[in-house]
Length: 301
Image (cartoon, rainbow, N blue to C red; front, top):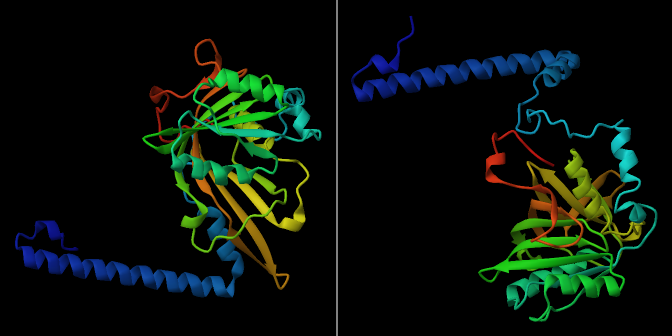
């Protein structure tokens, strides 16, 4: 009968017994692993069966069931997307983006805005005057044929939010902005050129996620210039949207290396509103509230 270390009152003796049992357990585990390795070397099918059965449980693959998840054959969603606000941009319309900041922005926000505007091939940065309300900026942007307006907000002299307004009829999305790293803070970063990048949208699985994904897609031209080998990625994981930009480099026809171009940042959706920006009378399609987080396995995108 094995000895339980918890029954031993002497601290030194209890520690010795516990260490001995731990070493014996590790030896048995190593012995089993070596035996399994030898068997799998002789029969590779055993390894395939083990890996197929040994799928780790994560928050993503154990997420709560959601009726709004879009399946590959959901014709209702795809039919509605053919006539939504972004449909024209998937049929060849070129985006034209106006980027600005909150009023009286600080140098840190301007520095981020300078790199942010370089992400989009057809974006222009305009410094915002203190007298211009958001609604007035929207009117001016529509009058100059911009298709999107992006406002970078700040708090305590640090960029902390981004508002994307699709013109002329919306929708409007507001995101929390965090984990910013500028080019100079990324070790070994490359230099981005004016080529139109390829776009990767990952894990936007619900109807809300599809809307946000299409909003991001409408910010980029839909005919990338492959010569530039540049890729912009929006990766959604647990409702946090991670942005990265890379250049891929092929080597020997077998290997592909990545060089990050920057900047990098993280977004989290706070609300989605129909129409253009109107916090007082606007019709909200979705708004995050703390009481909605009933479980760590509940996600909305």
